[in-house]
Length: 140
Length: 140
Image (tube, rainbow over all chains, first blue to last red; front, top):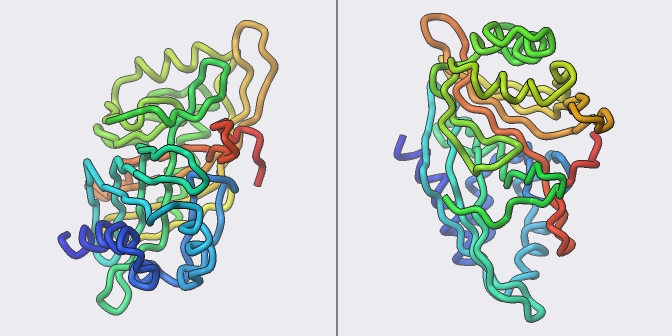
């Protein structure tokens, strides 16, 4: 499973290093993407650096992300992995640095011997107290 | 893949019929659960009807859930599935009926020939407009 773990962790390390092409090499050409932000779901072009570069441009430096509580389930050429991840970043425009903890599920397929991410689901829960606030203040 | 789809859909059908034991038969004894509500993550006892019955007791009738845009990826004895799901329910206490659309990722393992759910990740995104509101008003 080490090769699967390597893909999961290196996509964050490459992002933190500003290596967009290296990060995208961890992804399949088409990725079913359930992101922290709307819409509900999207079919992401895993080879188009445009959206990623636009997102990175909203921060002072590339966000640092960590993977914790990683659990990988795999058989044959398919795997999925669950983890509790964090993102630390400083938005441009004077906002303070923040750290956000979120849940991550990753789906992977092995193609020509190489594990690639074909699905990502990142989220925080929301408070069911009538406020419908996203629970961005949780920590593991 | 029909047997995997059957598990995914029948857990909702059994819930709608109030068949808690039948629904739980779709799950492994231990489930990594990333729910719509806090906490971030939990290891759910897939055989304990207590939490499910307590949740059902907050509604006038068992919620009706649907699975749409289902995509299953499988190899050997592991599968994961993505979908855009809905839940329609009427809370007890006079609140109006609601329909909530959310993203769902399900992870499954085949044990003794039977597919069981070992991971569920249900979520809505949140608005990145500074409000941190959960996006409970989205539709596919």
